[in-house]
Amino acid sequence: MLNIRNIILAAAALTLLWFGVPNFLAAVWMATGEPVYRDISAGKQLASTEIETLIESREQAVMLTNSAKAMTDLGAAYVALEANPENLNKALASLRSGIELAPMNAFAWQRLAGLAGFVPGNEIEALNAWRTARSLAEYDTFLFYDRIRVGTLVYRVMEPDDREALLADIERAYRQNRSALRAYARNANLLEWLKFLLRDEEKTKFLTP
Image (tube, rainbow, N blue to C red; front, side, top):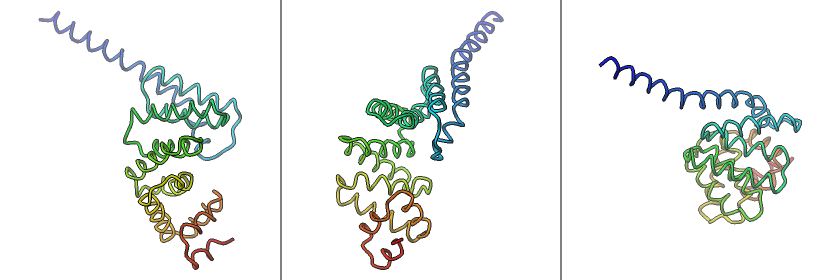
């Protein structure tokens, strides 16, 4: 009886080691690149060596375990390094893989929408990703303004219902804090878009610099 228990305990320990060690090492790699990822997310200009550190940390984490965050982080890192066709395709592939692992992650869908909308020929994928991100997190204030920005990228291929949804987002943002919306739109070069979509004399006057 004692031998059977020892065998069971040994098997359990080996199982924990088998699954635990890769996850632990992946977490260490993720932590290594996290400061760089935060800087990229904040829009800071970084040296290529810093971005390469982030890429290495995420690639190592992906090799050790299926991490949706590592894959979606790679999408941002590849583009930050250099927005050439090769890196854009790598970024799209990473984002798609991350979404396969975490299909309810609205942030990943939003990031895919923004990147696909930027790459010619991917407008329909971008629109579908935009729709998904909106359905998953319609009232998430963290994604709200960026969803408006991405909506302008895919406006040309939108259906009437999509355009109504985009307008509803802009109207709500205007009602909630029109000064914050104007500041964001000015920084993102969206003022003319907002005036075009709102088509309101009073709002146009407010949004005109």
